[in-house]
Image (cartoon, rainbow, N blue to C red; front, side):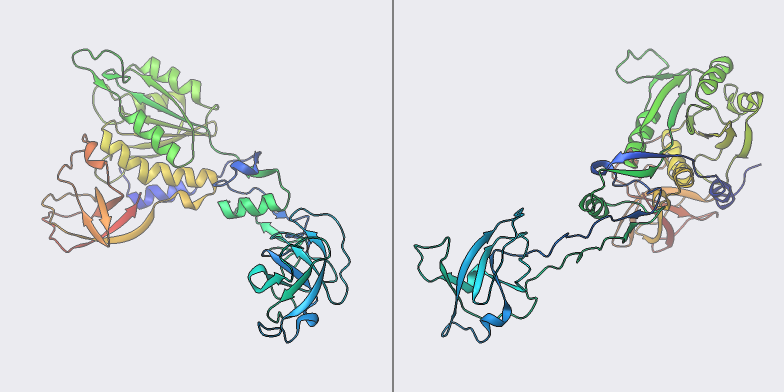
Length: 404
């Protein structure tokens, strides 16, 4: 018996997250879920540093400096970025310093080059005299050690999704590799004796596969690699295809063979395999005859073979299933609302999910609505939920909308 979409999603949310972690390079960790608390072993920056090119000195030495009455300091050294030399800077002295250079311990301020000048422009090195044209306060233009984060700070909590900024901070703390939660292994199996791989000769009565291509590309956009295979409408071959993947993959997504036609073998094959049926059928259009089963810790999500039905139910059900497996709520579609710019005439005894484009709160629905038409999905950025009812639905109606 078909259950509601909400009931199906509740069952999916009960899926246990995957066990296991793996180490990935800090250069490739963005988008992954951190597996443990990561504590910085260093201050960042590890020393006081200059935020600009200029001169470092004691702020008390330039009190009262202005363009009319500059203060004269003696340069006693040069501090480029990466300098490891320790320089002593006494009263009335300064050092030339570059952005990122370590500020000497005797200095407490830095002034930019635009507010200073060499007294003799031909003597810009060594013990040159430098004119300072304005006052600088204590610790002005001074980046403290640990100003970004201090040694012992927790940079990333377990369960956090790492973004590019956090990856950069982990690198700044010295992490070359990062422990992350294991990604699920995914396989896509397109069933149907009529299906032909793109590029092969197209015999009469056959069609080129689009489901596998759509699903693999959508999985890649979401950050997952997927293996793929084809299987004709043959119970024995279908059994073999699934058996080969049970235990090897965490998620197997199939398309086709789930309805009530003569060649829809998937329900019987899963039952013969001893798979635990989590639900069969959901009250929605398109794609209502979908199934979710489990066998040996492998989730088996069976979608309709109609291209748009497969696409819509992937977004509605496979994404939250992946979110549960990865403990990553960001994989779910974000819910908002939109207003129909044009009326929709077709009613339905169950909720219908329309492909649509949402712009500034307005829903633009393409003219093609068939579950077998995929082209109309191109350019769409959401699914809009049309409630069950006889219709027609008027322009201006607000609909629940799920961003792709």
